[in-house]
Every structure is written in C-alpha cells, then in structure tokens.
View 1 (tube, rainbow, N blue to C red):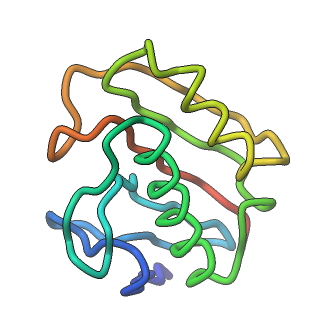
View 2: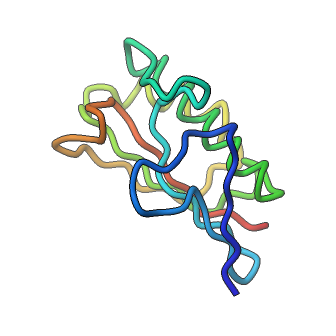
Length: 124
C-alpha cells in the first residue's frame, strides 16, 4: 500500500506528483528545489544559499515521513552548473553525514531555473 507524504513545511508539488511516497518501509521523496514553502518563491542568490534551502526542504519531508538524514540510503543531485560542484558538496556534507549512495549530474535546465535539486530515498 502506498502512503502519500505531504507537509506544508516543504514546497507544495508544482505538478501532478506527491512530495513523497512510503512503500514497504522506504520513502521515495520527490526532488526538492530552493522554494520557500511559506511564500512559494525561489530564494537564494548563489549555489550555497539555494543548496541550504533545498536541504531544509528535504529535511521537512524526511521528518513528515518519520525519518531523517541519517536514514537516507540514496540521493540524486542535479546541478545547473558543474562548476558549483565543490560549493554544493560543502553544504551537502553537513546534512548527509552518513554518506549515502549518490548520483550528481549537471542538467541543462531545472524547474524555475534554480541552481540545484535533490531527491532522496530513505528507510522509514
């Protein structure tokens, strides 16, 4: 059975999808971008500021699902510019201390022209 995760502490879905789904004790969270959930606006002028907000949004979904960063087993990270890789990693490393498996790729464009997006799979 699928359990949908929804919290107002993370941005609402901007399309036909859920913030996350729990199935068989695993959370599959949709990608998070640097949108302030209170205003619905993209925030952050650089990769560091945007990555911080992304991580907070990811954390809100993890918390709503009853888990946390230490239970994340896989992340997928998307960057608008691979030149931001080092700065992104500095922020990422403060949150994902257990070093889950990860993919990190540069893409042509992200929703709302943000600089980064992160999705996670976690044990609940």
